[in-house]
Image 1 (cartoon, one colour):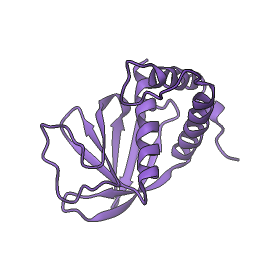
Image 2 (cartoon, one colour; image 1 turned 90 degrees about the vertical axis):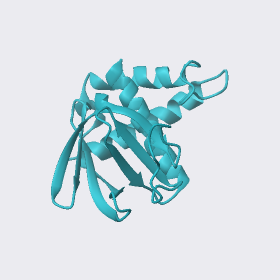
Image 3 (spheres, one colour; image 1 turned 180 degrees about the horizontal axis):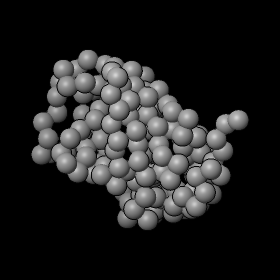
Length: 160
């Protein structure tokens, strides 16, 4: 059988706190405008549920290598939602969610970083605390935005 969202147990409460934090006005990067958040909360819950269930099983993405070449990769999340496991080209990398310093959309990277030419609008770049970057390329802007939103909420949940 498949893994249900209940398999993550208490951590889903952290996701709920992450969603609430994302909807808070002080959190401009993920804040959703509007007085009535009921619909937005339901949409975010459904988006997060699908995202987390996919990562627990393993989701296929495209990672962009240093030279700009794209490589298929598989991304997993630990059952406690604290660690991402990225596998590509025969190697596996463990990424602590709390070590993701920033999630940058498109070519909008931290001003301290030089944006490589191969990073384009359909990319999300994870900037880690150690200064390393991991760039994912998506088929469209909507996929890029959904991935970034979910990862930001997951990071907020881990920090809560």
